[in-house]
Image 1 (cartoon, rainbow, N blue to C red):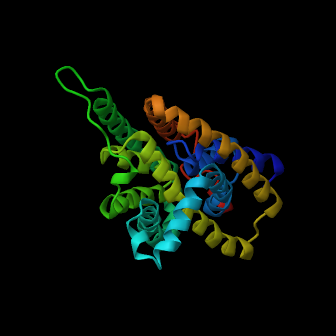
Image 2 (spheres, rainbow, N blue to C red; image 1 turned 90 degrees about the vertical axis):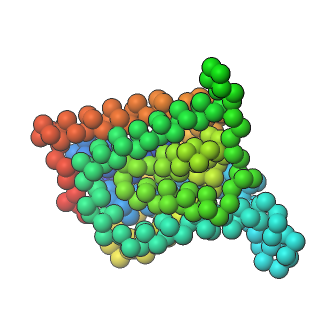
Length: 290
């Protein structure tokens, strides 16, 4: 991998990781359109460490408070009723599905799941689901004629059941094209949470899963022919760009709809089907790199 490729792929990772459009799909598509080798799931997992470092810094106050309260709850029964301590447990509970499925489906994630036709399908299907969830949220927030607005749930209403549902939504992102934030935010909106609450829990929930995945892939990368300097550059670029995107996105969702992302996903999926169907792109373009 050249320095230019790693810079572009790091830029793409940072720009798309926190938006509901799938970073893994865009890394795959960038390589396919540019005629480069597929960067692979290991490269994706390692560069995601950079974007998760951005999460750790942006949400540092929340994370420190939650971790501190969780540790104190281990020895102090009274602390177990504390909301921050409960959030620590809920992040652990919500991380179980992707941990189990990530190990179970590792071969599929690195192989069949990277087919461009599957990516096109998931872009469209998850785009439609996100659109429906967004419309339901907007209806509750603004109400309609003869119908009052309805208050949506916050993270204080989060329990084990909803935490697990969020977790299974996150696990769907093991398939490129689904989008970790898109799936978890859609799930949250469909369960009645506010946009801000769904996005915040989505980002917090991603921290242990992504860091664990990155560390796990580091072991395999060390045994392969990974080009480390360019990969490190991509990770640093992803961190810087990712931090800026988080700050923008958290402000955006407080007043704006997700519909621009919905339209983008559907149009990109349709375009991808057309390009593959016309023979312009092979559904396995770039996979020879492994």
